[in-house]
Length: 120
Image (tube, rainbow, N blue to C red; front, side, top):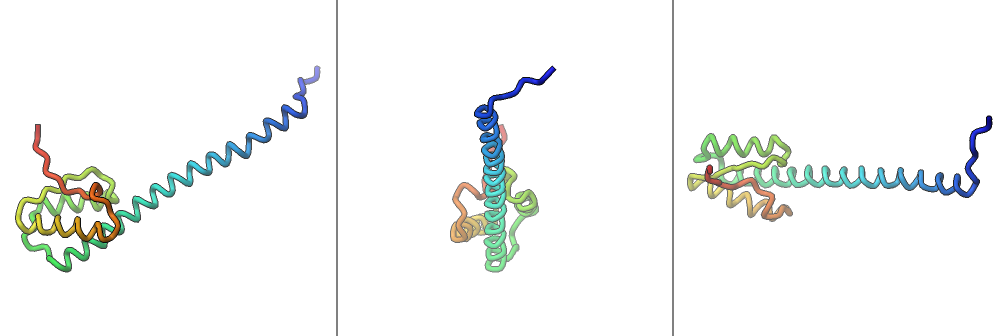
């Protein structure tokens, strides 16, 4: 018994969708790559700002909790929702300088990990 055959126009139509499906997948993977690359770029910019802030201000007066929370944010590739809470005047000065320097490096104000939330 012979297998049913598709008419040539139907077969051509099916084959026309194959490259489109591959193109869509390529586009999606390209967008994901751009997002990852942009996240990496932002973190690199943030790290440059941090190096500049440390060279200007040093680390004297930065508490252990502040430094550890900040390092955790950096270790996550600047992706973790961090709560780096400045408490001392030196920590506030460092956080403020990070925001200014980071914005000078092209980061938006919502990027920074500095926040002090009260526990419920």
